[in-house]
Image (cartoon, rainbow, N blue to C red; front, side, top):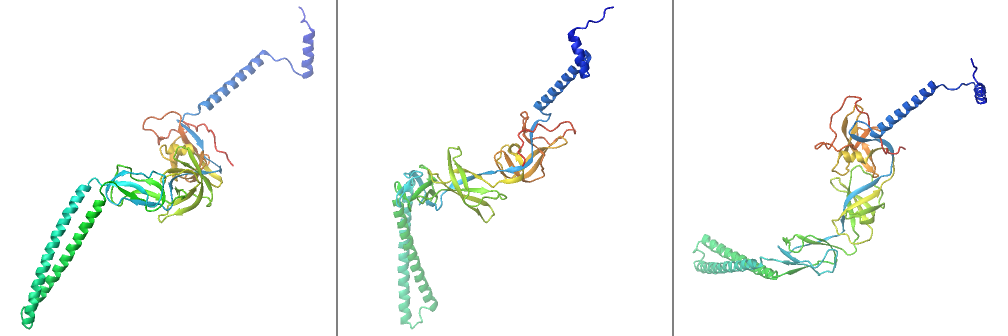
Length: 420
C-alpha cells in the first residue's frame, strides 16, 4: 500500500488551512451555494417582472399626499374696452357697405356704413296713400266745422231775438258742443296730415344707400352686422371705443379662491393659439348683486385686440404649505370632457379592491397637482389616473363593482408629489 504523495503545493495548502483553522470546501457545499444563488436570482427576476407588470387592476394609480404647492391659476376671460359707444341702425334695412373696418380710427361725423332699404318704393307709395287719406279726413273735418259754426250762429241769432226763449237751453248747449267737437276733429286731421307729410320726407331721405355716421371720435371695436345683413331699427350695428383706451380682460372667479392684492402681474394668452402673449396687471376683484366674482385685468400696450376676444389669464398665487394634493390626471379621469371646476370628483381604489367615485372641492393647481380643499379623502388614498388598456365601449368610467378582498393589490406608484 502506497502512501499519499506529499507535494510541496499540498503541504503549503495544508499549512495555510491549519493556520486559518479551515479546511477545503467539499463539492456538496459548493453545489448548495450555487443552488441558493440561482434561487435568489430567480426570486429577484420574479420581483422585477412583478414590478414591471404592475398588478391585475385595469388602472394606473397615484397616491394623494400633502405637500407645498406653488399654484398657477388659469382663468378664461373676455377682452373688453371701457366706455364703449353703440351705434344703432336708424331704420330697418340692409347694410350695403361698411367702409370703417375693425380697428379703424374714425372722427366725429365720419361715415361708418351705408344702409339701404330695398322696400323703400312700397314705403313711399304707402306714405302717399296715407297723405291722401289724411287730406280727405281734413277736408271732411273742415266741412263739419263750417256746418256746425253756421248752425250755432243761427241758433245764437234766434236766441237773442227771442229773449232767450227759442231755441231751448238744451238745443243751444248741443249746438255749442257739436261746434267744439268739429273744431277738435279738424285740428286732429291737420296734425295727422302734417305727420304724414313728415314721414314722406323722411322716407324720401332713405332712398338709395344712406350713410350712418359716427356720433363721436373713437376706434371701431366691433362690427355686429356685415354688409348684406338685414338689420332692424335701433339694432346695434357697430361699437366704438375712445381712441387710446386700454383694453381690459374680465374673468369669472371661483367662490372659494383667494386672489392676490391689486397690482399683481399675470400673463394673458390671446386668440387661443399661444401666438399672442401679453402681460397684464390685476386691477380689482368685482362682486355683483348675485354674488358672482370677477377679476379685472389691464392689458399691457400692444397690438389692437377686438372686444369679445377670448383670453386665457395665467397668474401666480401665494405658496400654499402642507396642503392635500391630487394629481391633475385623476381629475381629468373623473371628468374626461370637462375643464377643471370648483366642484369636481375623483375615483379612488379602495382597500377591498373596488373603484369608488367621491366628490371633492378643489382649489388652485400648478399644472401637475391640484389642491383638494375638502372631501372624504386623506393622504395615501390611491387615485385612479387612467386605464392600462382602452376600456370597452360604454365603460368610460370605472365600474361600481368590487372583487373579493385580496384579489387585487394597489398598482404601481409613479411620480408621487413631493412631501414637505
